[in-house]
Length: 176
Image (cartoon, rainbow, N blue to C red; front, side):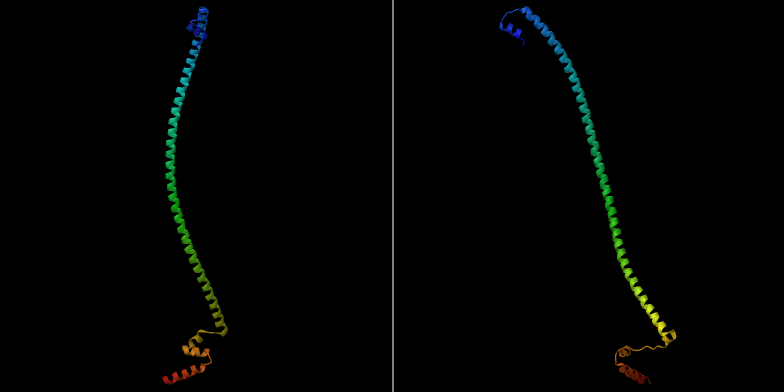
């Protein structure tokens, strides 16, 4: 409260006219300040409404973004599941191929062993052919050969070939 108004209330009478004039000027100044404050208040209220509107727009945009994000995340998750299943199927196929390659590799090793055996047999055949050439063995000579018993063969391996001869003579006598 203004000092001059306080003096009037307390009962001090001074120059009332001067104080009233002073109060009118002060009142005019205060009224213009109030008007300017009202204008500023209206401007601030307008800015506040604008900010609230922008806030509502941003809030709705945020919700829309969140919804789009959730949909995108859900779609991405579904795609990842599909791709994961595709990759798992591909991995299964690759494992089967690897297994078949392992089987092929084992078969290949087996075939290589057979080839080595065949080469060894070929080498033996070559050495037999060399023997045939060396001793001049012909088909006619082979046809003239007669089969002999196991005992006969065993006898020739030892110094007991006499026993074999005796057995042969014994057989000849029985046939006669």
